[in-house]
Length: 556
Image (cartoon, rainbow, N blue to C red; front, side):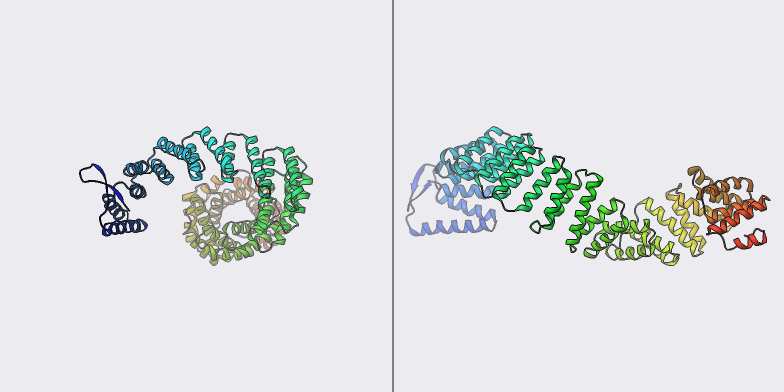
């Protein structure tokens, strides 16, 4: 076999190896070059291919391989002359042309790349790879009409191809050409009449784009050829909804959901879609009923239980919601948002034993979530287990980065330490809370009230309670606190104004008793006794209330 090459003087001539040894040496160099290329040792591979090229300078294959190695090593500019030489030596090799076009693309020479692909397609009209590459290049360079021309050529030569159809539809949708998208669906269906998914896609597209009459006809055609009645029922349901026949739509939806031919995930997604389409309260109630049925049939699906919990919670059915939420966290306990909903509901319903239990369960999975410590600490606080409350709140505040939440933690710690009669810690916690939030009403109220009960730092207590009623002039609890602080500093007439207002607004034993106390201090004993009797009957008065009434005396 003769091997063409260049002479040392640069004059083109044919050099035929004189010995078998020369041929074997060239073959060995090429094998080593390919080996290094496979190993991605590009420098070694290139070195061997250059040795081979010195031995046979007129080999298109070796020129092409050098171009390939350089291209793989991101050296497209250096690869280019070798790619061009390969085509010059072997103009009818389509793979060399394809490789050259890709080299042009890699270095951003898109016009040259397109010209190379065009030449390739002209020489080899049925070369599928080149057609696709050329279409992609036209797309990249914004040559829409040329791209569609190539799409048409592909379809003429190779038939309708899904990937081409999808790309054309994407472009048409971007251009707002809905009818052209529909035409492409129809071509795809005609080319693949037994592929039912294309028919279903077309129907869904028609419905979404409010081509309702066309959708109705497409459903009828689909129904003639398909036996999957549940899918058709769903399409009819959606169509009826879009036509305003919502009662009929929901009946069809319920019927479709009774079948097992539709998997849970599909049912769940469909139901979610209906719920975002602004259903009326009556329609939402029906959708919730369907969701409950779905959750009951799929008791092992976390998503179903949590979804129903969300629906019921949003509709104000908190007690019903919590049952589904608890099922959900049994199936998937590492879901923080569901735990948070459970705890919010239990706090709203004053279910503090459950609140503590579930907050501590949630902490097993989310030990760094400050809010869970807050719920647990607050539950213990309300249940008067102050030591546990302090432990939870002190731990939780370490994980708190939100200043507002930190204020709440310190406020609750102030209450808990007060319950333990560790007053210095209580007042320090309140001070910390007010550093973050000087107008926090809970802290201003409790801090000033507890100071007055202890007869400590009454000037500060009065300053805080005054601030409190200025911020909330119509809150009976705060009016009572301010009135009681005024009472504690001996300002009985001024105290009476606030306590009288609070007593007229709040049927609470403590508030009424305070009003009776100030009346007594002002000498109105008979009216004071009446208010004490009222406080006794309401409950929540002090342990001294009966003695006050019996002895007609003030005990503090």
